[in-house]
Length: 132
Image (tube, rainbow, N blue to C red):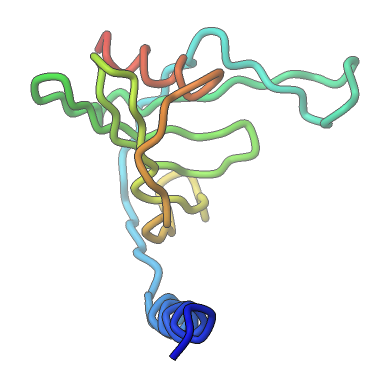
């Protein structure tokens, strides 16, 4: 079996497994949102005159253990992310991503992400979480 065949077999197994993952639904959640400084994003990409909206962090769910911090954020597009980061080396991992169905209900799934260096908005989100 050549490398391409092995890669295709592994990729098809991943697709089958990801199709089996059911979204996680949490209802009745109480969020306390804080605007994250320096995270304004335009409502229309490429339009410098468009209204700008910030990212928000749920300060009820910032969990810190040593240099590791786990936190939830909402993007300007109302997407939900649960992130894990390292405050010292500025590495970040997206654990879950999803969306809001209402003000107290989120639907999300595990994200296929790997640990990477936080830059730009990600770095500002991580730094804000590290100061909580």
